Image (cartoon, rainbow, N blue to C red):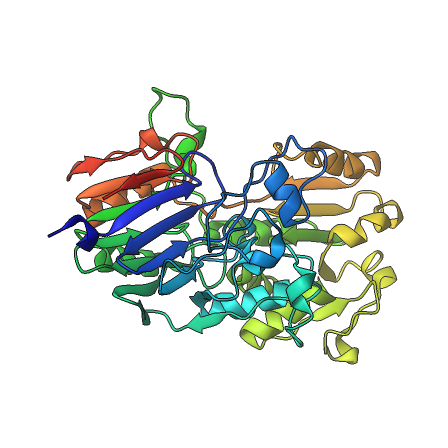
Length: 433
């Protein structure tokens, strides 16, 4: 087979970082990309708010044809590839933030659930990065046109076939990808785990990816072990998390209880609503109540701090003053509601569950918790990782048994290994044939 008849894989970004994964697979006149997220640099005092600022900080890779040429003179358009597609594994920002900047010529694909979730999250044009130059043409949405696919549906981009396979993650609609070229099969795990409500989905992905030529997998959990230390496992699961919430609520009779979570984690929210129903009524901010309804049809009580119309039933609204004084509710304290902390009863309880700010790496983290301490409000952190634990990542690799393993999306990808073939540790910009 001549060189031109061989597929190539290029690791543009996200190889030794958590975020910004951008990988290209090409074959003849066709190419596909995954994902469409941006890097996050917590040390920046002002986070980039548009493409130009991302470009200035070196957070955007110059790829001819991928981005919208209307973004500026630094963007080169081209038609080298007759067939192109961008596939988004899930809608966490580090995998989806750049979607509005993708060249309109290129179709963007994701699961139907991810599409509905992203459009709901971006209802106010403040989730993924905006691009006003094009948004005036979108009419009813702040998000560029997207193509939603059923789970296990396969799409052809020229001679490249891409199948979306559901996986377990803490973002609703998350998928891995099976990418088949005439000469090779590539599997991309996206972000994957075995300790959520969809463990069997991840195991099914392993079956779909069995003995693939290349496995591109995340390695977030191994990022935080000291080199030379054993890979540690943990027993925290989504079910245990829900039971910890339940125990704490039972022990806190008569107290005001608020909480916050990451809004893409719909399954956690649905299960908390169900398990806590005999003790407290769930109240969300209006935007998150809208997201829950759009994805599941489930309606919840809500509070509204602005004039945005989310199409929710007026009879389900609860006033913020009631939430601050009535212990019969379990209510979401979002960023906009922080100004009411001083009005909360001393001794109230706030539960932080993988919500913003996400961790000590964020400069907003310590001041956030200091605010509760200053107002005599107890805080508890009950979290469960969206990423596979170290030993589960090894189990996933053992299930798939790839010919070549490419661990990425990690600060220490070298901590993952392949007993069944070769392991590559790609550098940014590296190409393999």
